[in-house]
View 1 (tube, helix red, strand yellow):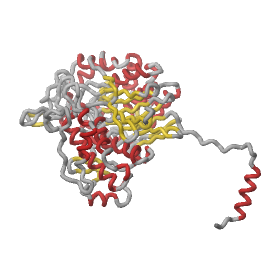
View 2 (cartoon, one colour; view 1 turned 180 degrees about the vertical axis):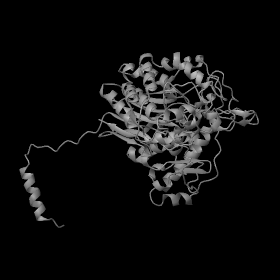
View 3 (cartoon, rainbow, N blue to C red; view 1 turned 90 degrees about the vertical axis):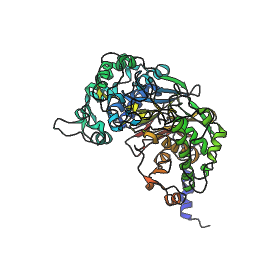
View 4 (tube, one colour; view 1 turned 45 degrees about the vertical axis):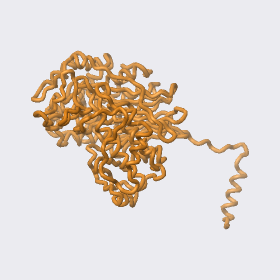
Length: 566
């Protein structure tokens, strides 16, 4: 072996000159507090709350308030949400359900234009009957009352200042405002997004929303009653009763809204425990996908052809079961336990041909499954996700939505109302009279794909929080990040940036340009032809993971989000 004597002499001189007592510099520790969200201003608002000693749930309130201002095409005060909360002291994960509810007067046929004929989706979305009773704020208030450290009234200052003083228009909001979506052409949306010179707002403009600031001041003082009772509630009812497709919603429906807190649904995957909200969220479907993949060798194929092939086939199986059996468990029996039984998961995994994709799978027959009609839900996207870890180690993973772009396009108090009821099946039963699990009913929560996940290790410590917007694609988006981090050992940012792939029926929506060389051709040889687009809405995956050197965050490069910590 050749050794350069000049290098050796310099190295020896340096060694002699170093005091014997000097120790190597300690490795710098990474952040212990972190926020990942879809808008930088929302991340900053959350971090300010955390620096004041606030909890993860306190920060969630501040973040949602800013997102409702700067990302109104995705979420807001007039929408709903699911949250998973990890308590670092007890190692327990609680699921919070702020999903909107149908008014008491809703009927199974409310989205039929004639008996057995579903209404045009574009017409239904902008009608008042598309809106459910909003639940996001009530859910946050419940969670904050249980896990908050700061006064509720102190959590809206950043959003109020931005609404009153002006904020920089994000590109996604400007693009949505000028899009061909039917909501963008509704009078309220046109008025809000049109400048004094008659042109639409564009990215980089400064925009104000004093009505939103006034609503935030009421929320700070009164809690969720500010929008579920009183003058704003009356405005909501009046707005929803306008037009040719009016709502049956009443003031009693609004005042009677109740969020829910339940234990999360948790199942093992490899050496981890993955926790999600129960149905009607998409969380149990994510667990089914993981459970199916646990009976394959997907972990031995990180980011290669076989790994993505197995992922695509598990995706088809989880979606076909989810679409047949998921609904609001307060109204229908959802066979969650049967779907997640190891024997059932193994039987579904055996349907995957390791060499070539077969015909589309049929729904399975898990224990507890009744006779359900095929689903006729067409779930659009209009959603966002964020993850928070606070100084005490508590974590929030929250997905929040107004359903489609700008919800139903109607505004009250500076915020858009949702069109969440169009997440119900437009065809409530089949020709034999069997009801769809996701048929409309008064007081019922529509099925959702939102799947905010939290992962723990064997000691019950936080490992990862993740989730995504994306309409029905949320389930596969979330599954991808979990597989990427837990099975393929990717840093969370790399898992988020990896190609999205949704296998459903005989269709595979994906991002061909993001795969390593040879994977797209390899998948095609196995009967999986990936096509660009087809997601309905692009992903906005966010994630925070715990490492030996502190927290590490990831934000979807497909959107405008960031992950920041200290």
